[in-house]
Image 1 (spheres, one colour):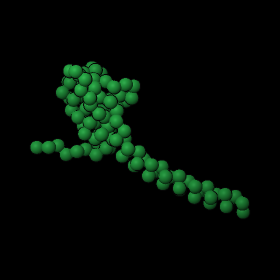
Image 2 (cartoon, one colour):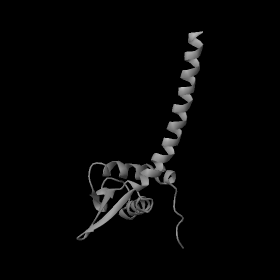
Image 3 (cartoon, one colour):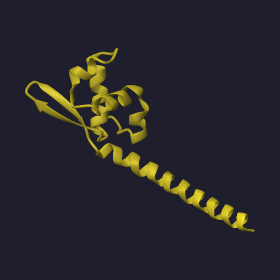
Image 4 (cartoon, helix red, strand yellow):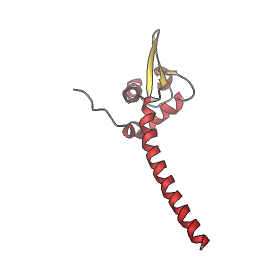
Length: 107
């Protein structure tokens, strides 16, 4: 039985996954070194890693017996596009308000 893929917002909704992403902004880390930062089992951390990997937020590279996690841009692109839509929306609304207020102040 396969697990349904979570959407981007479900992936980042979990505080532990957000913390993992934040830790990876500093440098690549092994799964073991990531697990040391949490009060949960290594298999639980591995499950979070698998979700982040499946959503394109991280890549995993095997180096010897270690598995290194690195941030990847793909997962963030969907977030960026979603936020950009609303950023553009509000810029447009504020520009219209500015135009209206400038017309009223000239009267």
